[in-house]
Image (tube, rainbow, N blue to C red; front, side, top):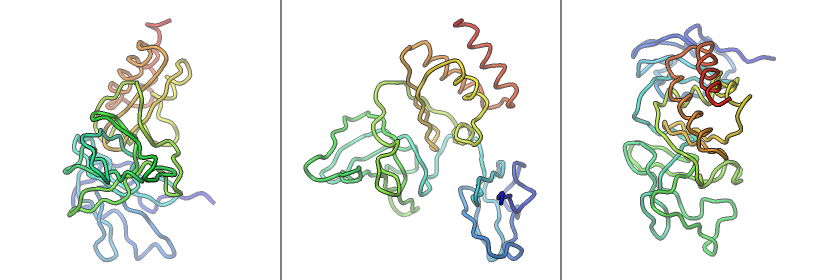
Length: 237
């Protein structure tokens, strides 16, 4: 059975104070709230302006184009190592405070095989906990303890964008600009929900084209993204 959103506000612009969900009408349903939403008794209201988004099976959030990132548990983000302590790495994830990555928060991590990251290393990590009163905790494993796609991002090019663009790049189905580029070019990409994107390929020119296409795509419709990507690809043919 296909999961459908329980509100008509999905993909529409919403403002602080808007009530977008009435829980009293949603029997036997469990929903997950992302950024920009809060629960007041039986209602879900908006706390920041943006566009209400929904992903299966049951997550809602408000997408807005902002530079500042507010950490949320289970977000995948790109961090930059700024210091190493005896028990953890201090990592910049563009949040209000530095996050910490325990030295054992790696697949099979033990005191005998602690990874070594130089200051400035980019790493793809998962936010484990995010409380306003505490520094966020990170991990280089998924919820099952496997490394999955997490770890150091070697070589390549990392750039910053809005959090709204990051979410667009991670949307399902694949966003048009990445779909168009993927048909013609071979490259690796890691997208952090904190507004950082890492791109790597065998050719520096390919990396530059992919990065430029992504940065130019934020304000474009799906059709416009494909047209823009096709024009950039024509320059290297």
